[in-house]
Length: 143
Image 1 (cartoon, rainbow, N blue to C red):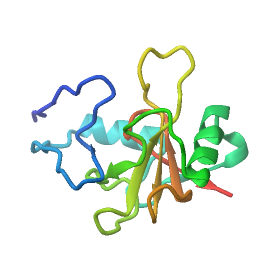
Image 2: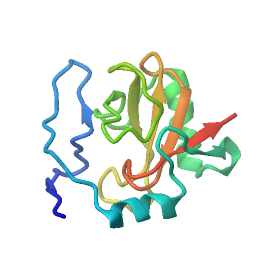
Image 3: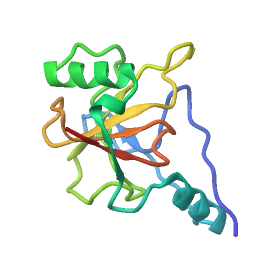
Image 4: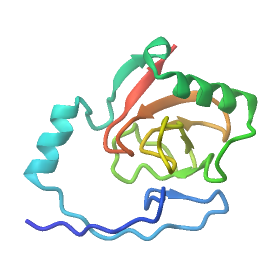
């Protein structure tokens, strides 16, 4: 099997788009057995991510949640962009439901790999998920 990989700019993603509704391009990608094994090994499941308590999140993730609840201001202009859930790792909802926010990574020269994705109205911390591997797997943030 072969997979088509697209390079992304610094901190960029083909999975997020600006709120204005602009659509990111998507190339067809075939899943390989190795990718499925990696997904299974990470504990991520399609539609039913494992949970993590807020208290177990890194301190930077707790700060990002605080900023989301406060409505900002956010440290990066990309915070709050539409997250399309094109890999279907999160529960299915209509387009526009999920938004992504950066979780700072100490020592990183760019935005790093960590994000929080929240569902519902933009800039509200409801139905939130944490990823530390740039959207390859998610953990649902439990209260």
